Figure 1: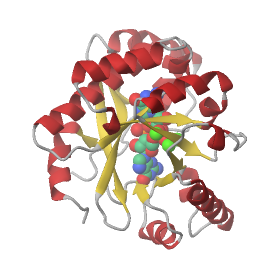
Figure 2: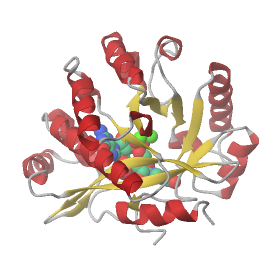
Figure 3: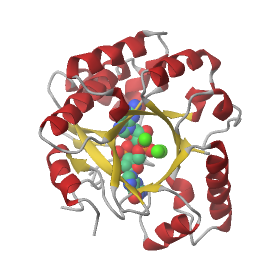
Figure 4: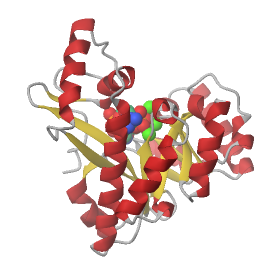
Length: 278
Ligand code: C2E
Ligand code: CA
Ligand code: CA
Ligand code: CA
């Protein structure tokens, strides 16, 4: 069961470039995917290193194409962004996650924060995103303290997004910076904007014990986060060596295959009640 969330995509991998014909095919299938109920959400636990307790979940979309089988989000999300389908898909993700989260709580689980990935395009129409999220929170009755939004540095940096971010933060939603350090961006937004948390990208984590420069970057990010009072989580943690390095350098939380791959929603209540990973 531990392996069930791992990528076993048959014809795509994260690095493969999709050719033009394939892109059109995906675009056309994407238009029907929502109506045909082809999407699903998996949840990957985030673990506090010290206590080994699960402190959050990241929601990750899955698409099971009726003919092609699973198509990874790294392939279809950029295409959905390009053709304007990310707005309805993003809304579906938020609604599904908030509903699910509330349902777990109603079934007696300890409340836990769930993080949702947002695309830059979802910020484009001013005020609309905040309104949509408010509506979904009201509809599902989820306490916004249990919702987290993951955005990229690029998005956070753009001045025109500052107001929306502040509105979301005012609702008590947690804002985190995904893939921290991988974009060419200035750091000044960290002091200007209501950011709560940063996620160390798995490309750096992958270099632990192999690439001293990656280790130096991680140490610098951890120091920066601690001085700015930001929560920090490392993603893509796969090995005990990586965990040991992160723990030694005072990283709080981790997410990765070492403890849990992304899980089906059904498995979450059992995992939450078992508490710590083996
Ligand atoms: P991300 O936000 O950086 O998500 C983390 C990715 O790392 C996920 O890939 C997850 O399955 C994978 N992962 C987790 N632990 C490990 C590990 O230990 N090792 C390795 N190598 N990988 C690990 P996934 O689910 O394929 O998602 C890829 C990207 O697609 C995400 O990257 C995110 O940018 C995007 N995405 C996924 N779901 C959504 C969504 O609902 N909305 C939007 N806008 N984007 C999404
Ligand atoms: Ca993410
Ligand atoms: Ca990430
Ligand atoms: Ca990433």
